[in-house]
Length: 466
Image (cartoon, rainbow, N blue to C red; front, top):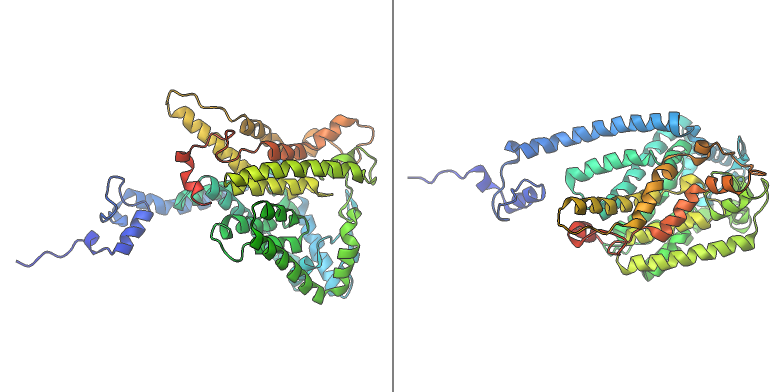
């Protein structure tokens, strides 16, 4: 009697079996070398296909809710005001003028112009051949996409989601990110902050773990496009990534020199004069300026320069705290927290840091979410042992809704710039996001530290990514 034809599972190759196991088709009690159940007949497979549709619909719904919240409750839309400055300045430049002479009126800061290094102007130069509507159609999805990258990398590090769970988590997380004021303003102004943040995070969380020779290129490019990401050289030095440090410096230098070949006059002007002129960015005492310098400026009359000596003392103090905490994070292999601490420090020590520069709120909130999630899981495990409450995470998470989710100026009815005669309390309230950033540097839980409730069993998948 002839042998019967092999069944469908028997015909699956080893490669197919491995793929099926990775896809979650193999039953929990099956041996690893057992053939999987055909995906076409399992309820789990049907549900997995539907998850993509659910994700898209969920993103669309949450996007609408976020849009309505941003426009009706949180604050004004800004109508891509900064993107319009870039667009007009680049067109002014390509018409044969010096890009740094372009200025346009601003309802808060009187006049604003192009303040980025010459490389940014070179990279933005294609705008000159496109209508503004097309530029928006490219820039706004780019902001959303890079925000999703930041959310994805943060979730991957802390939660280790896989497959469809990661897709859903990133979709929901990205929409929630646009509820947070720094990210909402980035989209509202048409800013480049999430693009800069994504470059840095790809360096730290993707290239570095792979031992790539290109580690440092993202930080170097970010430095050449916008000076403030140079703070991440501190992260590279503290983590003893000597090759990556050299790569970042060389990348920044080479790209800057290439821009100088195209724009020699503007490059010389920028790095010898304009780089040190803080008046070009607007009033330092504006409520939008969430740096230490902004706090000092709000105690003075509009247009008055704060004491540089006092500012330097505060900067040194913040840097000292950042170095101590970052080294502790690096000692535990927690590069996500180390990067976040340095990013927050960069916001605080810069002469002018607008609220939308604080994109590091995303990984900070993800870290807090992981710690609090682990705490809830331990409470629900009924082990009989009461878990230790991570007070640092609780103290950061409780005010986050108020500080990160709203424009504090609008929420408390504060002025845009002039705080003269109002006393010290409104000045401190206007700096609530700055205080939260400072608290983040001091208190953000480090994986494996006593301030975090994360256990090895819960964090194993995320730890494997380091």
